[in-house]
Length: 305
Ligand code: ASP
Image 1 (cartoon, rainbow, N blue to C red):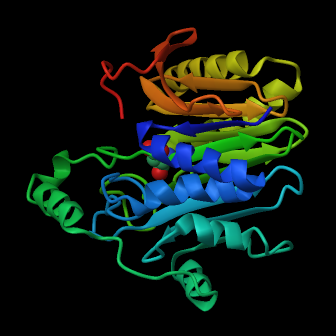
Image 2: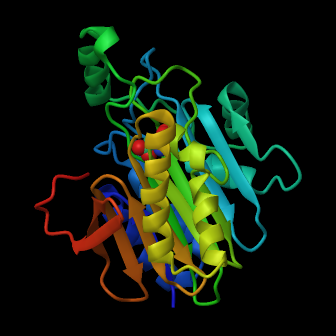
């Protein structure tokens, strides 16, 4: 069985493309790239790639990752500017097996440029207007968290091979140079063919505190069923943050294990896309619940991205 799961409604068309692509050549890396490129290239999605959300200085800085569950090779980039597909850069960095797997800032840009990746501005008029409108407001009242979302996808094929990929422009109005969970291994993503693949979206600082993508896979390795592992991990970790830190932030987690069983955990209402073999691609909504979450068909009635 081949199973693919991805974050937010924005990944639906990308998932359809990924499934079509997989049907042609059974290559998970190409399917993953098809999904993430679709979201990165669509300026209507203001939190990933083209038309992404700028930082406090009006500059779009992106984070992305890729991991191969067979070899454990991974690549990641952070706070990179003007690279049209940050995911492609992460994928390329995963081929640097011994070192230089995780590059940030100017060094990441230079690597992309030197290796012939497409370079160009990600800014469009809508994004610039959004930024200037916000900048004209009282800056002290602006929270970095106002607007975000990461495209994440976890995939497993019928041989139990797993891959994961992520891409985001991170938090709107973040401090220049800020990194969230998305490019940080174990936090925003992890894949291991002996267990499965996992990825996270939401407030990166909160997700990193629990190293949640690795943590959920460890629970599955110890015998928990993926849905139970993901939903209870997020519910329990949310309570830990509340008790230790006084508050928490949005956290959503997706996972698929090597047998093709999927799981979702969230402490906010969250949409995800699922594709199982040749069955129709479907969007679902996970509704947060103090003990886990409940999964519903997406009928468009719930206000979630
Ligand atoms: N996790 C991303 C970050 O913190 C944002 C998101 O997924 O909403 O940069």
